[in-house]
Amino acid sequence: MAAATTHPTPGEARSAGTRPRGGARGVLGRMADKYLLIVYSALAVIYLLLPVFVIILFSFNNPPGRSNFLWSGFTLKYWLNPLGVAGLGDAVLLSLEIALISTIISTILGTLVAIALERYRFRGRAGVNALVFLPMATPEIIMGASLLTLFVAIGAAPFFPLNFATILIAHVMFNISYVVVTVRARLAGFPRHLEEAAADLYANEWETFRRVTFPLILPGVVAGALLAFSLSIDDFVITNFSAGKTQTFPMFIYAKAKIGIPVQVNVIGTSIFLIAVGAVLVTTLASRRSNKR
Amino acid sequence: MGTLLKRHRWIAPVALLAPGVLWLLVFYLYPALQMFQSSFWSGTLETGFTFSWDNYTNYTKALTSYAPMYARSIMYAGAATVLTFLIAYPLAYTIAFRGGRFKNLLLFLVVAPFFTSFLLRTISWTILLSDDSPILRVIHMFPGVPPEFRLLATPIAVISGITYAFLPFMTLPVYVAVEKIDFRLVEAARDLYAGPWRPGGAIVGFIVGGGLATVLGVAFEWDFLITGLVGGVTGAAIGWFFISESFVRVTFPLSVPGVFAGSLLTFIPAIGDYVNAELLGNPDTTMIGNVIQNKFLTQNDYPAASALSFMLMAGVLVVVAVYARILGTEELSASAGRM
Image 1 (cartoon, one colour):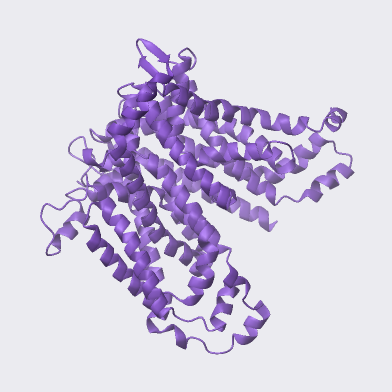
Image 2: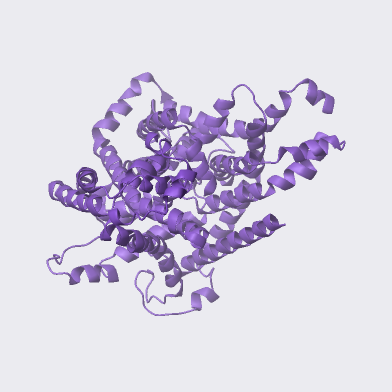
């Protein structure tokens, strides 16, 4: 850090910049600058995308037996019958229900917390900050396990035996923090003078919120909700601890992992991927258009 | 309503906070305390559980039986953190400084794996690393590779699975930190005769490369002296030929907060992970997460499982507290917000 601050101002740097300075870097250094980093990074991106490619490819596989493990020819038949395995449709439906409900609850709760943290100075603010931060820095297995001990200790309905409600409780819990940080990021760059203008024009607090504040933070709220939805629909570890006999889509996959994954699972996985990519594209384009306006 | 809010200024923040904070207190914080209490239980699900401080033996029993699994979890998570750093740093640097108009597209590709199921991605690795996969066939073409060499069900598969799973968690914070660097500082350093970093680069490269490779060697169960030496020589070569003084003096120091944030975001989830060890490993790669999962969900041995996970939680909390004390939580929250 100290080294950086002792450097000259940008003006000086520019005037000195006309001097040739490539000589000291050496041929290999310049080659590294030019190609090596690019090639290395391209390989890293390929590494990141390779399993995604495998998931998509194997949704078109035509395996002779039950396990979708070796490439054995192209077919579309599983795409035409995506829910043709016992239990798969129910699991997907359950995952969608939980993701939807937990997203709605956690988005509301998280947005309110974000507004309070960004707008008000109050005692215990540091404590709330820590409480919001900690779930993002705790291994999932610990959150799942400790919730399970709570449900077992209570030992009575509606918490035990584990059911739909306990999954929902867990999902809202781990989603809130992510909504808070996403909405706060939007609130941090918020043009406060617009709210003051509304107040000057005799809008009361509620009207100001509804007509000015909320529309402006809406992109942050939508981003938080999308994040919560994708975390919820993909969660396995915490769900596994709070689901009991109820089976979500990730739990269905895990249960089948040892005995062979049906090809339909890849079809559903690929569809979720395409929908998610589509949602991101749409929101990116929409925010770009609104920024231009 | 308006006058009431003005007279009691504390009402608004409390009303806004209450539902969310209560949810986290009741379903995040309180369960952690409950887990501590449960770790002093004895009994079974059928007979019911009784609490007694005398059941501290749950902890001594857990430590004597499962110390190797704790050690292995730390080792695997550490090795995975080193590997994600080695892959993510150059990648984030390239996107930030060379991305140009493809910057957003490249960032999108980094997070794209998150749009598919985490489990399906791990299962994809079982396909990619299996004995009949094209990757293995290519490896076996090389002379000197023993015919019994395999990847699936080895520590290599588990560590590379963890590395893969958390790579975006390292890449994004590093990118956020590197992207903020004013490139004119780098140019200024070059104008002030910052050149290649020959002997210094070679020496530091040897130490850093050797150290990192030794960690990996231990985790992979290879001969760590040879691994360390190979890593040291590679590091020295990279330091001699490719590392410039401007990188060492300007870019890297300014990106250190991102590296720390990324390391924490990788190491913490990695140490509790059990899916990779379960799907890609063998019985000798069991991590502490597998033990906890098994005791909670298969054996219903809640007291022992609570003691095991409470110790894991305590360890993680110490790491997080030290981190938050020194570096604060802003960087972490910022990168979480970007995902």
